[in-house]
Length: 285
Ligand code: AMP
Image 1: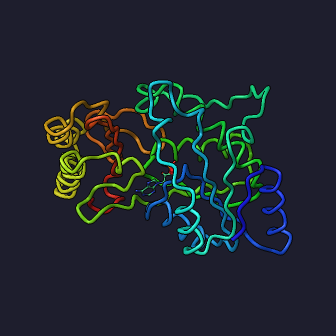
Image 2: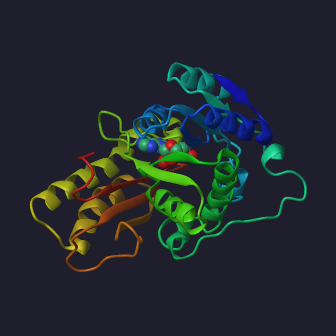
């Protein structure tokens, strides 16, 4: 496994792989890798990637001043070992200066898709994400890029980004990987005390109940939201949103729904967790 730190070296390694006929697979991450991230590496292979690149970069642009950039877990040695064990071919782990050298001043911003949900609570977050991912797409070149549906809105807007900018990138969204008890894997789960982790299960419990109601024929948007909101409000310290939205546009839905995704963001202690379930599409949490 090759490990590179410089953007130019990353681009050259991707170009060299394509020159041998390989299909490049890209998995962008912020490190502190867990099974959720590593399942994206497997998915890249299933999508036909024969040369798989993981990027590890805690992108300062996507954190607001009051957020957890300073304490975000950084576990590079363990991450490299996990990538090696999973058959990753190339890891790109740049430092901040390599990605944003002095004078850097370009921002990539999307429209409507960035406004609801996360956009309300983290207004500068998505422009940080789309700026760094545009750079990663530009460096990688033609590839299949795999993102987790855990960050549902992010996945949808990165699909849009590749389409709108005619980038030679096939964006794939991979299912959420969960613990046995339903908790969605997240690098931020390591912040949780055992009490907080127990309380965090309320999201999976709520989504599971809504999923059961859906399969029993319930289609009322407000009622489905309330099924999730109940346990989340009881167990979490504060709730940013419990919402039901149209999967492709993330517009809020009302009345009777046919295609819908339930989305949650809530705080337990100092940790903010997100999760979601596309009704009738995703398996029960
Ligand atoms: P992050 O390192 O948190 O920026 O995540 C990197 C990628 O891994 C993103 O595409 C996430 O959506 C994805 N990811 C994180 N957690 C999970 C999970 N539990 N299941 C599936 N994908 C995940």
